[in-house]
Image (tube, rainbow, N blue to C red; front, side, top):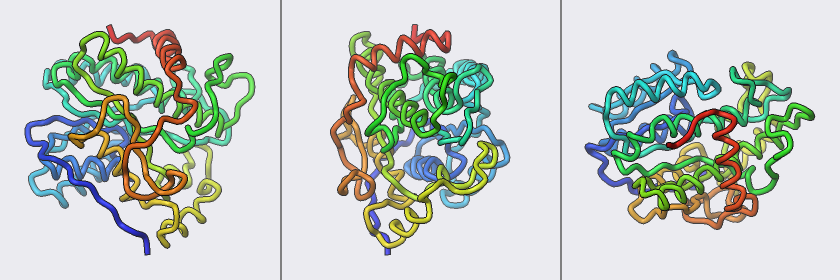
Length: 310
């Protein structure tokens, strides 16, 4: 049987939280836990039907939950801008963000509406643009921003000469790059906030390895079957060996986002050997998460998206 872990989430009454990718899996679990702690949770989703089902599930589990559904397609800069404009017009400060949504390893290269490689465009550039559009609200709420990387970012590199994989596509290499970029964004956001006096703190997390929906068959990505190795991961998870569960996989991000002890610029993940499962805690940054690359990626992200944190 899988071993279970949990963390204590402080009272979040009066705090507004935004979680991307909250229509299923880990993101749904995060949103539910935040709502149970009293937060007013904003759930931007791409699929309204899945979003509505997720909201109903949270409200059935958390009576009186404050949950708001919003429309967001992270593969579209226009969609990110529209959501930013809508929330800025409402004028409510945001106190907590978990940049959790992502896509993984389409077998063939796909492009976003703006021409970016799908994983880079969705996992990193979409979140970069969204957070930039939300900056006034993040500053008003002195927000903590937690960005969800991946165990895949332990290795790999940024393909600086071809960030959008137009010359030669490698799905896993592109996924690694996108998740390294997410981590670099988190580090550079914290550095720039500290130097610019923005009042925002930023850190990062990763869920380890668990049988989440990210590994399931995704026909919309051209993957008609579950990702290779998912069966083994499910078996290990079921038997409490190395791998985590969907429930345990959400805990590092929740710890990074809510714990009074969580540090700006720090990295949180599972603590068992290999960091693939186990209770959450602080871990060392991995080799690809270099400060000089974080600064460079920020500049490239501004150039590609045309969006700045001005």
